[in-house]
Length: 71
Image (cartoon, rainbow, N blue to C red; front, side, top):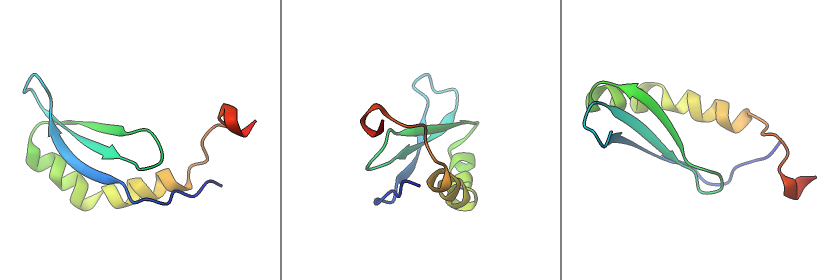
């Protein structure tokens, strides 16, 4: 199982068109991810405060498909 060495940066972001919010998860050693569908910044922050830790743990336990450099 691959181990990730850096803790991700997790921050709420407003959609460009202003219709909602998402959470941007920036990993140091893998592509960034977006968690979306929030109506307000407070909802996105609530997800960060109460759900993101479990979400990150699940991502760290997930074994990604082999990349070309690992074949």
